[in-house]
Length: 245
Length: 245
DNA sequence: GCCCTTATTGATCGTTCGCTCAATAGAAGG
DNA sequence: CCTTCTATTGAGCGAACGATCAATAAGGGC
Image (tube, rainbow over all chains, first blue to last red; front, side, top):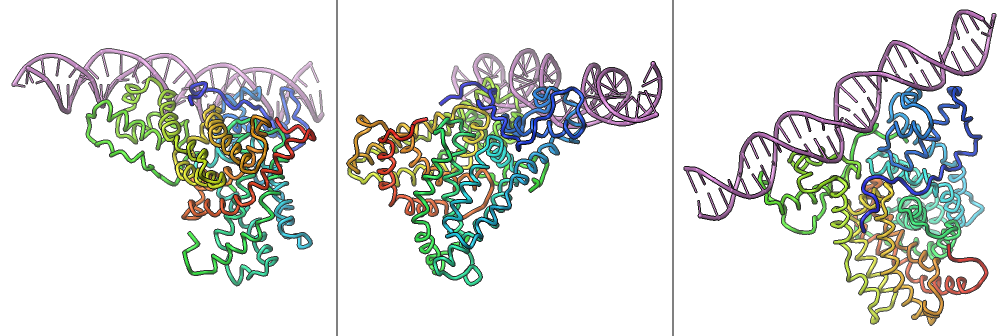
C-alpha cells in the first residue's frame, strides 16, 4: 500500500480541459494584457488542478513559459489568482438552465431529476472541476459547502417540492422539507459524483463511458425513488424521532 | 462563492479521532522512544488530515509540543512519516472480517453486502481516514487506487460471484465479471462514501446520524439490486457493445 | 552520589517560497 | 527613425521550508 514516489509525482493525466471552447491564446512573446490574463487563468486552472492549491507560482510560470513576477503583474497575490479560478470554474460554469429544468411542469419530476443529473454530471466530471473542488474542501475553504448549498436550495428543494405535489403530499409550506428528503437526492447524486471522483481524484482508469454508467445508475435508482420519498415524508411527519440536525 | 479567508484556515473540526482506543501517551517531557514515536504518529495523522499532506513539519512539531528536529530522530524524512501514516490508517484498519462476511454462505448475498457496508462505512467515516485518502489521491499517490483495488478484488468480486450463484447465472469462471457489474456495487458504495465526504471534506454539518442515513440508503437501493444485476450480466453476455474498458 | 545512555534541544545549513522593483525590450504612432 | 507606452524580465528581498549536527539534560543502573 506504499505510494510509488515519496513526495513528487503529480497526477497522471494532463487533461488540459476544453477551456470553454474559446480559441487558444497565441504563443507569441508579447501578448496583449487581455490575452495574457486569459492564458494565465487557463494555465493556472490546469496547473492547480494537477498539483493542488499548494502548487508553487514559479512552477506555474515555468509551465506557461513566462517569468514568475509576471504573474503578480496580473494578480496581486496568489490567493487572488485562486479566487479568480473559483469564479472561472464554478460560478461561470453554473448553468441557470438547471434551475429551469427542475421546474419544468410539463415533465414528471423524476424525469426532471434525471435530465438535471445527466447534464450536471457531464459538466462536473472534469479534471479541473473535481480536483480543485476537493482541494478547496481539504484546505477548509467554504467554496464546496457554499456550492453544494446552491445545489440544495436551487435544485433539490424545488425538486422535492415537485415530488411532494406529484405524490399528493403536503407542500413545504405546510410541512417543511426534512433533511432526510435531501439526503435521498444527495444519495443518488453522490453515487454519480463518485464515478468521476474515482477517475479524476483517485486515479482509477475505470470504465470508458462514465456517462453510460451514470445513466444506468439513474435507471436503477429512480423507479423506487417516489415510493421511498413518500415513506421518508411520512416518517418525518411523525414526532417519533428528531429528524433535523 | 468567494472563500472566506485567502489562504489560511484549516478545517473547522479538530476531530482528533478515537486513535485506536489505546491509552494516551503521557505528556511528560522525556518519553521512551516507543511512546514518543506513537505520539508523533498519532499527532501526525490528526495534523496532516487537517492541513493536508503539504503541512509543515515545524507546525506539526509545535502542535506536539516538541522541537522540529526531534521528528527527524524518529523518521528519516517527512515522506517516511507519511508512509507510516498510510500503514497506520489504512493497512492496520483493514478488517479481514470483511472478506469473511461477504463469503458467509449462510446469509443471502444482499445481507452480506449490507453488513459489509454498514461496518466498512462506520470505519471509513473518520476525519483522518477520508481526508488523508483524498489528499493522497490529489497528490497522485497510488494509495487510493491500490486500496480501492483491494475492495474490488477482495470484497466486490466474491460478492458478485455469490450474486451470480444466487440468481442462477453462470459463474465468473464461465463468464468473467464485467466492469459494469462492479460499477453496480461501486455505485451504492459511492453513495455511502459521499455521505462522509460531504461532512469530512466539504465541511457540511449535515445530518447528525450519518449511520442511519446510510442504512436508509441501503434499504432503498438493495431490494432492486439483484434484478438489476441480472440485467447487467445478460447485457454483458451479448456481443452488442464492448463492455470492458 | 556518580556515570552512562540517549531523548531532546539550539543553532544552522542550503533551498525555495511569495512577492517587489528597477531595468529592459517589443510594438504602435508620429 | 525616433519617441512613447507598457508588457516583460533579472536580480533580489525576508521568511520559511526540510534536514543536519554538535551540545545539553533527564533518567536508570551501580
